[in-house]
Image (cartoon, rainbow, N blue to C red):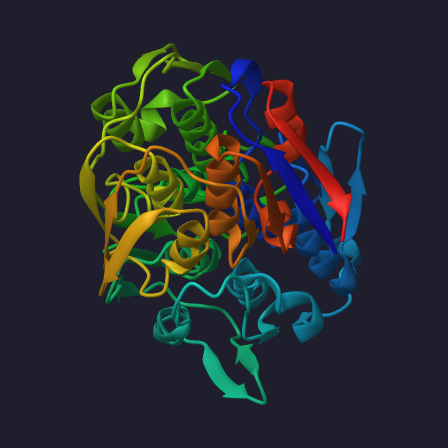
Length: 419
């Protein structure tokens, strides 16, 4: 077990490169199960969830090679079993994404019910109901999903609620189904579009990705291809808030501003000066205290739930009071208690946190409870007086590539130490 030590009070300055997106690379790795022939995936972030996904594929017998630049090649011709073990799956919810591809291509799958961050109920029933509508036989017993189908059939699928992994799982399954599938109330997230673009490069026939209605015309087979993962918009947003909370001035490279419009608008309202190009964003908050900003999370293109904790940290030291409403997950204010230990003035009423900015936070030992909460506590530590100790940082390694090294590169006093 490791922890981070952070000495607060240093404005961030300089340039940093944004990594490939965690929430895009995981479904893309799962999609390689659909390919006849090798797949090459570039711009892969070095994350614990990527390592876990590779272990999951490797345990099935998929051949995997990785080079010094984190380019991954997969070859499913060596696959031996269609079983996703609990001991691999328990740490990562995205492991459910192998279900659709295994069922579509090989006709059967046995996948453990998933684990992941404890941020609320994220049921898989919509995945299972959708696959049943496509003709799959599904039984859940002893914590495992047992699924079989001779060949999936195209179906009209209406999602009860917007679900990113549900949309991705059913879209992958539909690529090899017999006939046409339509997914209504589909997730519109950029990571869903990135997966669709990868599947199209493999030979899939998909229309409407990025809208709430996706149409997939099934094909006989998909081929391997070369594909580069899109930039991580949540890592981008986290570093933008790091600059804003410390009164810094940084430039983020290899990112996509158009994927972050809701976040950039909130930072503008907070008082930051922002400029951008096709693949870069610059933020300047030098010498200014942020202004409080109200926000409400909702599915893309609205404000992302994965940025709520980071903006809560920003509002802790902002001028004024605000309301932060979490409408996506019901248990996503666990960072609040830790921030209160650092002197934050936050009151939680149901799914809304009322934050009144204070002049400064004070360093304290804090404990990460989930991935984005980890990031928010690091941000709070960057601006707190004294040395903040962030414990249980294995969460952060699931979703941020070398976060302490990147922050140190921008001038932060932060280091990783053994427990």
